[in-house]
Image (cartoon, rainbow, N blue to C red):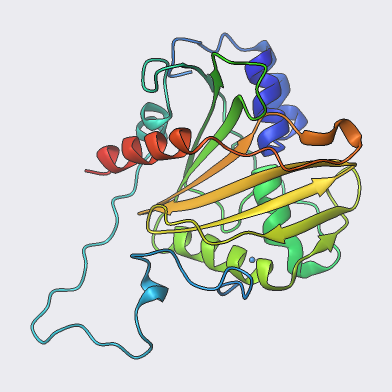
Length: 257
């Protein structure tokens, strides 16, 4: 159930999903859920489309880039970090939410993409999902457990998710709706990860965690620590270990060929 708690806290997956996870025979062999770039996160990650100068044209005769490979549920499941992928960590797989329920609306509406990430009810909806968690051998350290949600998209869905989140982080500083208590949001510097990425802190009820969202081709990967800082009394944000993010993105690149 520790892995269950990691996913629930980190990604805010629905109660129905967590009931499924508790009742399932999920393995612990290591294979184990609407904008533009934020002003506070000035530029897009290196290599992203928005990093190119405005109006830039490809060289004459250049071929357009091939569309990103779309991964199905089985491929995403195989790509989630497994025990043995990262020294010092064990991994568990959990069922990813596939229901059609809509996310609860936020006030202000500008914050909706942030809440959608928190609950795993990302819009546009993913065509396939896989979820898991990893736990450091040093289980007592902050952020020792990390929840991971991989979302596969058709077309330009993955780009739409990052675009919406970037726009939200321009103006969203606090919101109500969905979260147990009013939440405070703060954009962090744009991490140089994947094709494009954002990172921000989410705080509510005296607890704070750092969330990192990365687009790797047609996949949006969400990372969040499985513990919240502060114990309801405030404190620095719990961070996602960078080695976890790097190894997960490496597996995604290989899965996409």
